[in-house]
Figure 1 (tube, rainbow, N blue to C red):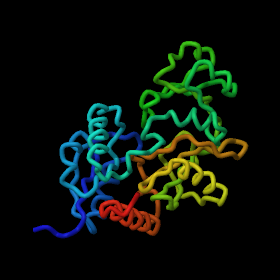
Figure 2 (cartoon, helix red, strand yellow; figure 1 turned 180 degrees about the vertical axis):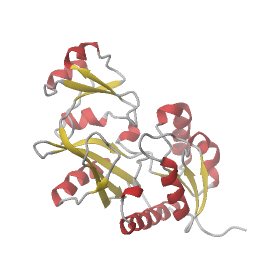
Figure 3 (cartoon, rainbow, N blue to C red; figure 1 turned 135 degrees about the vertical axis):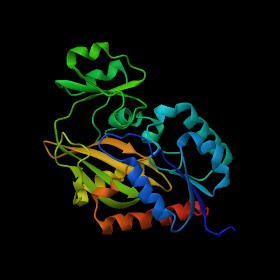
Figure 4 (cartoon, rainbow, N blue to C red; figure 1 turned 180 degrees about the horizontal axis):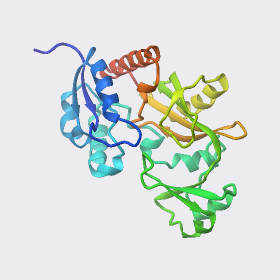
Length: 278
C-alpha cells in the first residue's frame, strides 16, 4: 500500500574502493536516516536512468568518479534534464559537476583559487615552483593526477588537463553546506594524511571565503563541499568546489553536528521532492 511519503531513488556505488574512506558506511548510515522520512530505494549509478521515473526525486550520493561510467552518466543527465526529473544535487552545478574548468576561469577572474592554467600560453601566469600538479579536467578522487618538475611542463599535452603549482600549505580544510547553510568544517592537520580529518572551528573570515564560492555556484538546493588549503602565509585558496557527490566524512564529526546535518538534508530533500525548490 502507498505510504503517502515522498519516494527517493538513492544513487550510490557501495562497492567503490575509495582511498582512505569507506563510502559504503556513509551511505548505509545516510540512507537509513533518510528512510525515517521517505520511502527509499538504493541503486547503482549505471541503473539510475532506467529507474528514476518511478520516484519523486533522485538523490546522488557516493556514486564514485563519473569517469568510470561516463556514457551512463551522460545518458542519466540528458534524460533527467529532458524529463524535468528532480535531482539532488541539481544538474546545473558549475563546480566539479561540470569538470574543473571553473579553476582556471576563477583564477583568471581573481578569485582566491590555486593558480591554474588550461592552455600552454597561460603557463607564464603561474607562480614559479619546483613542482607542478597536472590533473585531468574531468578527474576525481586524484585519478590521473601527476606531479611533474618544471622541466617537464613543456611535455604537457593540454586539452584534457590543467596545470597548477604545487602549493606548500599548512593544512587542507573543507567546509560543508546544505543548500546555502553552513553545517560544519573539518581539516587535515597532517598534510600527508588527507583523510585523517578533525573538527575545525571556522572563523568568520573562513566562512566568508567558503560562502563566496557557494554563492558563485548558485545551486537552488543540495550539498556542497568547499575544499581549500591554507598557505604558509595564512591565506585560504580554493582547491575544489565539489557539487556532484561530495563525500561528507560524517564519521569525523560529533553526534550533534551529524544529527544537525541529517535534519538539514532531510528538509532540503523533502522540499525538492515536493516541488518547493527553484
